[in-house]
Length: 452
Image 1 (cartoon, rainbow, N blue to C red):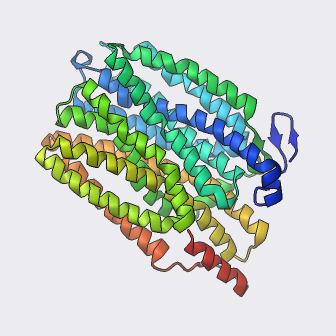
Image 2 (cartoon, rainbow, N blue to C red):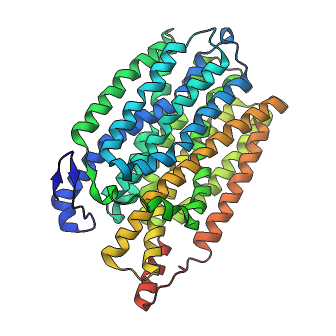
Image 3 (cartoon, one colour):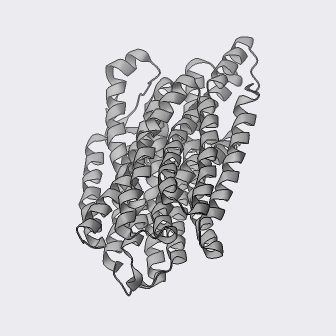
């Protein structure tokens, strides 16, 4: 492993066990740790407005529909910017882009600090909310970068830990907001806490992270990934898992205050629980997928999500807070497990396709790593759009009937679609299609695909 100016690593071979044990593991884990820190703060900034709206009482002049629209546009931008953030790793390098992307988080945080007061127009809040969306992009670049550092056998754990540590940024900012609301503090106190934390993340990324030349030199991988059908099939599944996680994270507090009449403080006591547990179990979803196969875990996870949603429909109709809250928390946990298992599937799918083409050994590993890293950003972007759909569905449901029941019925239908897609594509006929010419390569491809 050789490093040159600007902390570039020229040789990286994590599939080589000797290399991995001697130098690779230590370097990969160091980059993972500081990538998680930056991504964690990015998630906090992205979901900033899910807690800021709890501070915005009647004096701000915003209706529940206005608040759902505000969180929808934040979610939308966070999803869309994941695409260029994925490309940015190949253009600038993982370390370099982490420094840039973390620095950019100062823009929406400082802007919100300036305008956060009664009398500010709704259009101004929408504009500042759009800026906060850039925090959602950190996930895509971080996952693409970390995917390149770890061997295939450890990707489920590493990607689950990376994403889970980032996802924890959602409940952390909600917990900080709870403490501030409980102490009768204002929203600017919350923003004032995060500004120095962003600066710390920038400095640590510059000091301790690395770039990989193998990723830097491959700017065409995203185009190849975009042409592959599995990128878009997995995007649908990720809408069901991550889209649920981020959408519910934005909406949970508003549903509690709007439908169940909770005060902002009462809502804040509850809103962090689901995102916290959902974030913590994401690495477990990756671990389970490593052991039992991502497609199997994902399928049964969607079945459980559908069952939980059916109970939520009943709880919403009966207006039973005692039933609604624990089942909603269970749904958060399931979304976290599904996040881990779906992302474990991605490297396995592209590695299997490489084997099906007749590639073997290191060539197959490099091909799978190249396409899986690029596809993760695209899949993450589409998955984030699921959060937009959830907030818009809640907005329309409350406008139409004054409750979230209609939205939950729609979510139940979406989970049913995900169950069918997972079974039909990855479990019903786990045979690899490709131009594999050697019988041994075809057999290995089928074995690998069955473990997806």
